[in-house]
Structures are given as C-alpha cells and as structure tokens.
Length: 361
Ligand SMILES: Cc1cc2nc3c(=O)[nH]c(=O)nc-3n(C[C@H](O)[C@H](O)[C@H](O)COP(=O)(O)O)c2cc1C
Image (tube, rainbow, N blue to C red):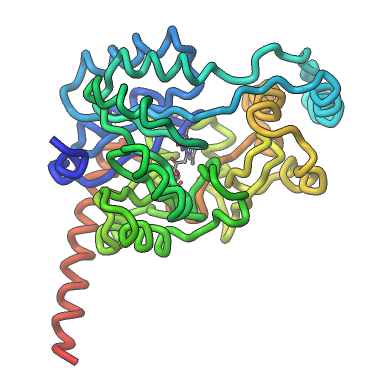
C-alpha cells in the first residue's frame, strides 16, 4: 500500500498534528480511533523511551498512526555563549522565584539514536521536521514498513524531500502554530501561506500533500481537499481537546484569545515559532536575534517555562498556537473530528450547489 492509498482509506482525512508539550499518546489514539490519523510527538523522548512508547500504542490499536521527530542539530556551544544566554534569562527566572539552571551538558536528544529506535519500533508512519533525512535513512524506515513524511515550508523543501524518497509532504503554511519547519532558506524566505504552499507543492511534486496551518474546522478541511491535499493536518484545533495536555494557563490563554493574537518569536527556543503574544515575547523582541540557536535556547528556557506553567503564569510560558486559534473549541477529540467531517461534507455540498447554480460561463 502507498501512503496516498492509506490517506485515501482513512474514514476522516484529518491528521492530528504532533504537538510537543500539548499532545501525548492519548490524543494520538483518540484521533486514530475516530477514523483520522493521530501523530505522536516523540521528539522529547529518549531513544530508550521510544520503543516502549510506540509499542504501547501498537498494542492497543490496529488503526494507522504516526510519530514525529524534530531533527535538532548537534549542539556544542561555547561556555561563554551559554553563560551569556543564562545571564539574559536571569531576571525572568528571578521574577518567578525559580533558580537559574546550571549549564546543561546535553541540549536535545540524540537524533540518530532516536531514529534508530523509530526504525526498530516500526510505526505505520513517521514525520520529520527541521531538517531532511538522507536517502539511506529513508530506506531504513521503508525496510521497516514505515511511511516517511517530510515537513516542507517551501516548494524547494518539498522537492528535496521527494528527492530523498519520502512518501508524502506535510506542507506547513505560515499560519501554523508552533515551530517553523524550514531547513533550506532562512525564516523570512520560508513564510508561505497554506493556500499558496499546498497548491504550488501539488504542482511541483508527485507525492501526496498534507496541508497544515490555519485549518480549524470542516470549512478548512474542505478547502485543503479542494486545493489538492490528501489530508488536513490540524494542531491548534486540538489544543483544547480533552485528551490534549495543554497546561492550564496555556488553555486559558487559547480560550480567551482575541483578534490576531499570535506572533512569530525566536526568543523562547532560538528557532522561530508562532504563539500567543505575551510579555516574554514582547520584552525579548529586541534581543531575540542574539539568543543562541535551537536547541540551546530551547533547553535553557525549559525550566523557566515549567516554573511558569506551575505558577499558572501565562506571561513567561511559550503559548504555541496558530493564527486561527480563536476558533479552537473544547471537547473530546472524537466528537470534534465527527463535527469537522460533517461540516466539511456540508461545505462541499454547499459549494457544489453554489457553483453548479451559476451554470457555464
Ligand atoms: C503546540 C504545538 C506544538 C507543535 N509541536 C510540533 C512538533 O512536535 N513537531 C512538528 O512537526 N510540528 C509541531 N507543531 C506544528 C504542527 O505540526 C503543525 O504544523 C501546525 O499545528 C499546523 O497549524 P495549526 O496549528 O494552525 O493547525 C506544533 C504546533 C503546535 C500548535
């Protein structure tokens, strides 16, 4: 079976976006059981944890699911860089009454070891973000029976994934919540909206395209399919789901988000990401280009963000969310999925009636 056939066979062509910090296996399972495809965000799991985590999902469902890894570069920053970054963060830690952490000796999980664990555990699908696999790595996943999806923010990135043998492309538009997945050009040259990105990638590569960014309900799902996507990948729309692990202050901020509430920031992690604007983002804006690149800054702010979440302080917490967050609704994931798919079918029928009613031009 091809990935295209797998996506076509889904009762509901909705993929739950992997969301480090907001989604665990419970959301993945709920979405896969409801006829979509859940993606388990495993980027923060150690290589030793990955095998049992994937086996636990496989043990309780025969429905297809995916896992997602963030391809963090190896980081060996100079001690002076880390010290300067910590000094910049010191007032924020102090404001929360949290101790400034010591310089860590590891900044992210070892990607090669994580990948080896994924190959060994052989999930039905694996998606990758922040960089690109080698053809040999793709072959190893294929030999294990795992479909490979590469995240692309530009047509050039989609072509690159096609060239290494990926089975599908996740087209991540500018609207998307969380980190930008670009890896060929700098952020600014990689900010294409979902509508333009899906259509242009569809024209450029002969692979199924998964549309991501700003899809919040059935209208968005129908629009993604109309553009030629094989499925719609939704992240922010699941932030308020019962099975999501979105922290209390983050959930509250998402529930009460006003108009145009998100911005891109590099300040939390050293890589541009979209979230609800808060005090940390505003006050660090002037120095965000100076913070060390991901994963260093990400690691250095982790204890700060954990302390802010524990104190229920939304102002020093990364509140990742997409541009259309004000449309997020609470509820069980299965119920949300059923509602979105009914809306998508209705939207398609309405559109058909509206277009047919105009006759030929
Ligand atoms: C809270 C949050 C965490 C995310 N974490 C990941 C992740 O771990 N891996 C990944 O590839 N994408 C991640 N993303 C991006 C999503 O895969 C996807 O591109 C995005 O959610 C789609 O846009 P939307 O949020 O408007 O639905 C995350 C997004 C959010 C909102």
